Length: 376
Picture 1: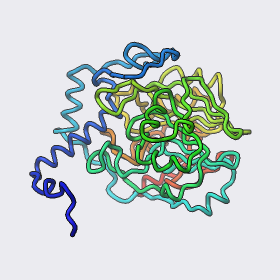
Picture 2: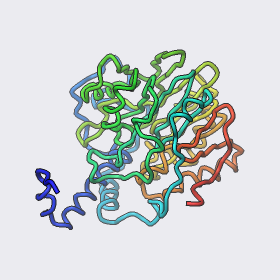
Picture 3: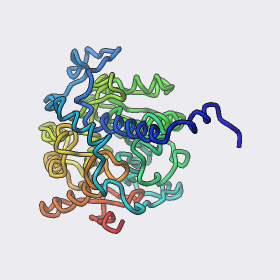
Picture 4: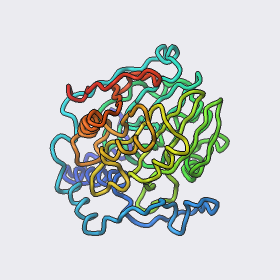
């Protein structure tokens, strides 16, 4: 076997040390995506004075999330590093995934969606393809030897993806912005649509600047007859403890000729949903986060009952829950988000659709709920 520089150093590392380092990286990744808003202050080298959302400490929400406090933050770090997680946060078996083929995409009806995992959704609108928050790496982490690991493989590879008219990004956390995926997609993507600051990060990664369009809340862009509007969300940003809120976060309204789609990105529940519904609704389908939640950080990640209320506020017809079933990012059971929202939706008489990962969903004629997670 050909030796790799540094490999002998890895072999000589104490096993216990490797375990602690992996746990530390995993906890850091989860803290950045789940409760990092209680972390260190941002230190942005770029300012956006034209944005009403930008202040002395970087970008900000319309309503400031309640701080966890040092004691509660310390307890969370203890739980992740030492206390361990309860059983069931990772599936015991294999999650069903339906492979997506090039032929299938070519013949798909206009208005078809494919959930590829977590918040990555491929959409066919007006005969073109659009992709949200592409994450294809094995781990949602700055390194691929530690951090939250996928429960399942994507239903198709980046190489198998069709040419993309746009990639739509909600914010810069690792489980939504995959640097390797972005770099690989740059050659087959016309435009990257991002909130303010996220596009600057893409340019630093090597994406041509003329392929990047950055929008503030309520800014919009029309591409090939499809209009994208960056709308408010209640979250935070940052990929290290030192760049908190240096970039903006957003939800998105996507409008084709006869379809209206809402994509939440990450968000806590806030009155902005009602405003978006009044200004831009109703929606044929809402793609709303339901996963990686905890009552301790509900100001930045909705609980299932809040996801349902957000759907109602938006004036949604069908509800498609996302941000679950791919990574272990919280303390709840891996299937709890889908099961809880499924029960709540049935009680409220709300139409919810839960396709298997990779299964085509035609927005004009969506299939009802199939509780596939129960057979795992």
